[in-house]
Image (tube, rainbow, N blue to C red; front, side):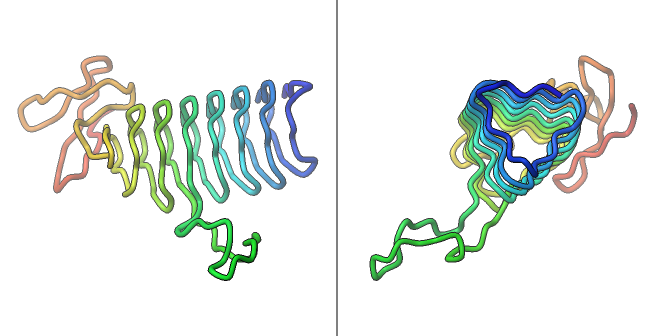
Length: 195
């Protein structure tokens, strides 16, 4: 494990073997970072966030608690995960809100998914396995496995395979032009048929 001198990692955070925490990054209390992860410059990982193995959190991404990130997830530069249904700094009477005044909601990112630069994921949402969120997208509803979503609000525009390349139609299947893997679509759900 490597932690840059300027990074702030809570004493009770867990960081797995081979992981690197870079300049000015902050990993909060009780966060769990898996093995072989990279937390980029200025990134924030909130209290109690769980992250699997082999993840990359790029520069200045904000992963607020209680996010749950599975293995092999890519979170691009300046991505933001929200965590509050109704954010306010003060109550209607003007009293400053505290941590006990709200109920945190989180973003879940399934295995192998990628979230592009400056995308915003508005909790609670789940990004499916191997899905891809385009740069600048605003995700307001769950993203299916293997979906490529883009726009504000994000909508599915294509299917992608495990390699991240858009799939091409091939008779009744979808095929990855890079790996040759095939997928079948049924009722808006894509499933791998081969590896």
